[in-house]
Image 1 (cartoon, rainbow, N blue to C red):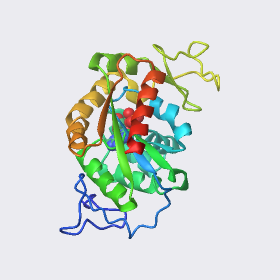
Image 2: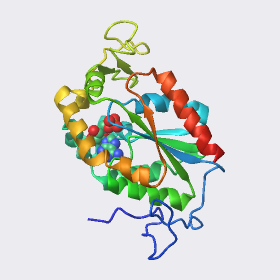
Image 3: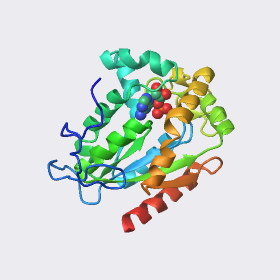
Length: 257
Ligand code: AMP
């Protein structure tokens, strides 16, 4: 299989190349940048159900960033019934992660689009060490920094939140029977469509997703702690707006460094 640990230029960092704390090539000159000065990647990190998507939606407009959810991109492929959708459908239904190579390529393509000019929020990526390393290379090649915010939530709360989640099959709006009920029970506020449980929000699948998080994603906490980019926000009980204001504060500190 192709080695996914490559930069956007398709090469691995040269032996002995200058490295930053991520262990990545910091030579950005070969990459023609679309990015504004000060652009960076905000990585919202945490288990399924920790509120990454909610926080991304609260922050994305005011930051002028793009919101990149790898889960949403994959679900769009499934809805389109295209080749990628067919490849990932069973894995997602079973709560497994899809291959690194696929998501790495999706993210590499996505962060090169013009709406990422001021920066972007990564929601649900990276989820493995291979993805984190690849991201480090992509960011370094573009001269972009990164801030990681870990939304820490109690395990039992996660299961409760995820089983209460409903989605509009037409516009994708997410609801939660515990915290954000629709105005009319079972119906989307915008489309009026009957809300559904996403296939990957079924309880058995949720447990598998949490197992995948523990085995493959949680170790990245140490990875980002080691490069000094990790910041933790306690997200078990506080309302989303309160959590968002803590994330805003971290962004201000990051920008002021
Ligand atoms: P999410 O909506 O972020 O919880 O993602 C839903 C599902 O999409 C996950 O359970 C995985 O099957 C797949 N997925 C999303 N992002 C990734 C990723 N970065 N790496 C591997 N699989 C992913």
